[in-house]
Length: 361
Image (cartoon, rainbow, N blue to C red; front, side, top):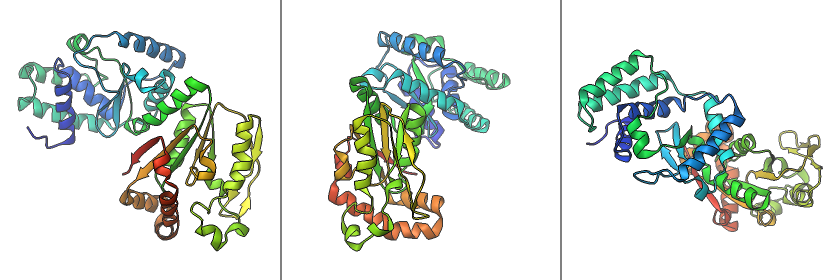
């Protein structure tokens, strides 16, 4: 059977992955795929403790097959299974925070769930699933009559598949290798310095902001260290990566971070071509540096984790147009992106990264 709709594929994938499922388990998958977890995280300590206990229980659970770390549920949400977390290096507190953020933020529309239920009904009528058709349709009618509340897994599903997971936004799951890399470093050495490099509009600043919501960390922006007027010479611009003031970043940020005490640095504003007020920095175990040229060879040696966000040209141009408008888009495409690409080619920034994330759309 060839699916004609993306939601059909989600439902058929569920049936293939979980042979013991019943129609209620498909309804639960639809709810999670369209509206998220359905849980409100009111008590963080209790929620963290419950996750740790469930994680411990999941290690010895008997299943028909070992689950993957991430199970897609469509474009908006996914399940992160607990059993593979330890091997992946993902810390329980990190997953809980991502789950809590996903539960707190705006979920999808009820109309999407309604449409998904219609797809499910059509598949049931076509005999796509092995369970009794009339009983399944009756279950579906009853669920609709109750106002489509959050669903539960069936007893058969629990017995056969021992579900233990958390539902998070798919956009967060894309960066689980980054979270896992940070968690492994913090567990092993208690501190970490991370660089996030990538092309224009690849999401470096957004990823750094997400990391700041998950961890108690400092974030430094390479945009605050572009060249002052007197540094903008033809010779400097001919140097790959030369259009960032790596000397000042090294002295004002990297050196004090290595020394471990409190310090301050001066952001440079390219719009006004002047320095802003000094920014005080309190030492943290985790320090994030984001922005183009953060993996400059002069700077890269001090990082514990190097991340590169790879974006395709079509998605990049579309994001820049949406973010900056047509005039600045042309300047990005004609001036700044070629400088970035020359720097990437000469320095091998992507090849030197330990984690490469493909982004787009």
